[in-house]
Length: 428
Image 1 (cartoon, rainbow, N blue to C red):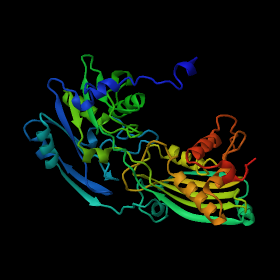
Image 2: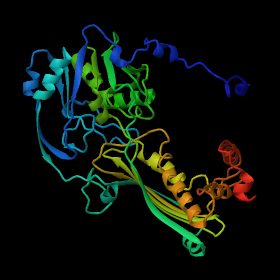
Image 3: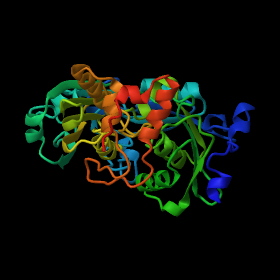
Image 4: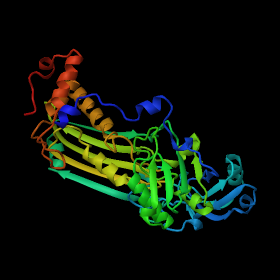
């Protein structure tokens, strides 16, 4: 019944009309009586020890209602979906340009910015590391006073070395993907205030309302039931709104002043607040027999999660699971790492770790086909997973394996003759 009503049917996008008519309200559109404007102070330094933060001049500017630093966080000065390794307000150390060291609330945006500009931060720059592979070395600068490798997943199936020895050809190469910003149309903005019951209300465009409540409560040392998060219209997210950006910071200013506080980040500040797609370096070694059937795959996958973990273990686990692509490979050895560096932090982005490995495993397939002198379609066809195939992690695919059907359709659309391409070969 559900399939008849929904699957395959055109449905109405519930927020489409309000967005195309301009009636949708984003946090930046919200206004309240006696509302203050918040601004953030971030430093253009990747790694530094904070010696002092002088806020005296900022506090004395007429119209400034609050200047906050790390000492003003009443609860846990940490945030993060898996590990609370990102300070709400950095007090002792800056680990990337993501870090925020001070907040201001003022009567106007111009006054708030003037106050931010008058805060004096004395700091000592520390050695930094910007390459994940370098960060894995014993003598690399430590981002968090512990080993920079925060996650290592091993996948083992069969005997890779024996399989390589029996292979007709072996292809080895290194592939890299770059950091990618979500570049959603709506930069970060947030409105926070106390309602007439003394409960904290936070308006934010988020992907994670229930977790936002918990993180705000933990940092503000407030009961969760006294915090309400209102999800406004969302102008794009793609995973980039799963981490905290302004929620706790706007809430802190509202608590301190007792007045509504709105923060609207400009694009440059927004780029420094939210996560990015993980840059990944992938070492691949793939073997095949003379007919093109894959015999073995060895992969080392290194993900740069920047200064903070966000979803790094989950993302690099998915990268490892997808390292073999949709292909039957009897012998597999994969090592997947998530590594701290002093780069901007990486987190969720569409595909969640599954988007990067295809660059490597599909390039390998093309090169194997080229070396064996067979069509790129054929090598994929004879190695494609079907119902009953087993993945590198031991999962037997017993339903919804539509790869070959998809290949048939795309081949037909390309004007290819499958019988001619494959010579009737199958992977059965």
